Image (cartoon, rainbow, N blue to C red; front, side, top):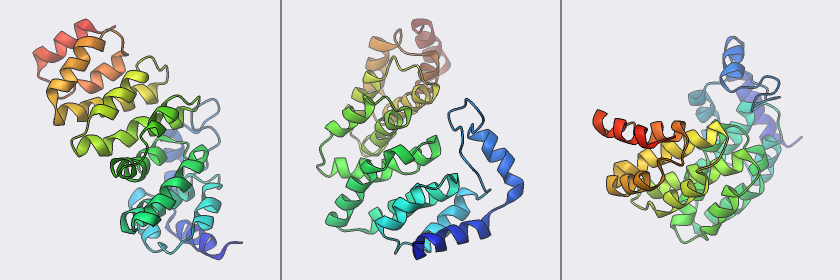
Length: 237
């Protein structure tokens, strides 16, 4: 056994609350036929998981890879939180190493919280610092719902730093996506675009409101006033 990975798993078990397992399993849709089918929960809250991760920032990528193979949801989350914290603290070379590694393990980033709590803090800043943004298109074109969600959510970093073009482009690519978790992610990102540049959002909606799902549209216009919301809902499907 890899000693550091074992230490992390042991700390997570000590933080586990068995009374929370049922709630988490239901919330993250781990039942038969649901998107999180087969995911195992031990009942660790996100704040407690972050505390465990911060105690183990000396974990190597081999440790992280081993943790990501775990069927336990909170173990995979902790591995990703370690990566996020290491990325924040790393120099340019270390950040590139973590980014490259992250792209090799996306098959294990397979629930929405695992995506949302990691990709925007690793892929986002790496691409803003000059990385090849075509990776977003590659991810958005994937058959994997989780890789498509990674593509969308990663653009939040750019949006929050004033760059909205990638978010608009990826959301346009995914307008016809049939997965509810992609529709919600696109709506979330578009809402954030509107906070930075409402004109870009309204121009997008003027062109595409009739093509997007009601879910995406409702999320995107959440901060609009009542009359604006009614206007765009009438344009929608």
